[in-house]
Image: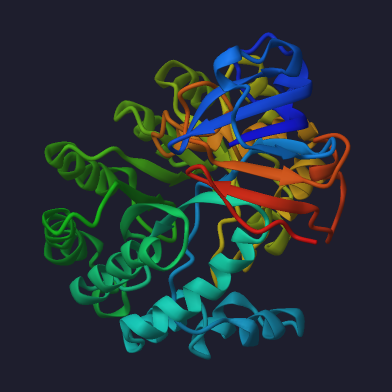
Length: 405
């Protein structure tokens, strides 16, 4: 397949195309699910001139989106506590009423795999409609062996039900379940670490995550989880510096983490450590917005020290019930003063790096042909519009969807 008459935002940081790696009057040749050639129409090699042609009539082509941080498999919802908070209830009052993560854990434990899968697919379909090709899915709402494994099995099943690539993260160190209240170390010993080993033995884990925060786990407790991950040969990532600075980002860099996520309270020493370790800063503007936070992540420092920035939906029932990467991009621009080009890089090439993927995230010869084709004139429109989806066609591993009329 040859896609012609397109404006191509390659998002290739090796490109000489300037802003967005933009190629006007561009062409992309796809063979066997791989980009075989990309460039200006006038430079198309002779060997590709007999390919079947799809004329895109000047539409914009970008890499397909990658959502690199989600909790999209869960039971129930927390709309009731959202309403309670807006009516003036405190966090403690919500918790006493059975709200918070306890509510999600209860509902996730009660749901069977079919129920969890059906609910997750509905949310994933919303993201697919906006041109994503790859999604990260975490466990962490089971906090017991059986439910954590159940969540990861559901995440693996998603790939068999939809044309999407899934990377899984074990998040057993997400919160302390009520049955282990005040005994976080015992929970790590008796549930978290044995469940990680079991999940790894079933081939259910691509990476290991944790939540390092005053309301969750200390750096010392997270380090024990990371030690086990290292022993199993699994990469790590970490929820760090969202509500305070406990040293989570530095701990993540000690283990060459793929990413450190949230980062509102990261300081300059964290930024320098991330730059040295090449750890991606994954920022989650949906949670920042939903929780009405005011402490901004250190964007200028990330730029200054060359830390790659990615952006993700953080889809979850409690702090970011968001299923739109287009809105995520707009939020990143308006709330964090990110440029539209940075936003697009953050849901393509930098999001790929945050998942340890080197074969996707930009349009380059030899990369996977995961593309999004848009009814727009310039890629900046993707972050500029609010509540508008201009997707025309999605290409997954070289297979085009039906164009949206």
